[in-house]
Length: 231
Image (cartoon, rainbow, N blue to C red):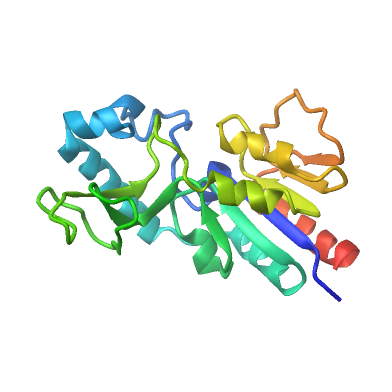
């Protein structure tokens, strides 16, 4: 029997439980950096060294972090469903937990990218320094989508969501666009589940069940339930 199509959208909340801070944390924007200073094309033009320093630290943090119970539980779904993970996170915790089909909407911190050619990517597990260049001779930058930049992977993500029979939203309150709009592309009869402690009040989404829990608390029992009910 053909496996049901299950699509998962994850946000910062799931990675926060592995110790990775988000710009919405109460202790300041990414340890008191301003978004405008480190995460926009203008910041890169103004002070590329500061931007590199900031993301070099983010990369170190990711390499030290470990997948948590929510990441691991989500990977178990692949034995029973046709799963695509769409993540807003730039870490590789889903990969390390065992998920195989992942769309990174906002890029990947463990890759660097040419400033001359968007498609020239390189694995990156250390620091990017000024003077580190791609094969075309242009400075390398982090392979992340900054604020004010287009999100190239939105179209593939929309295509996946439009075929979902089950749609999970984990660790995001659906406040950051364009990713927050993905739920609007789900088919009419799709079952939808939102797991996050800070759920917005504007929902009139059909077939949506809200679980107001942190990812590590809400996801493992939900996964067991989905396997029991829908496999």
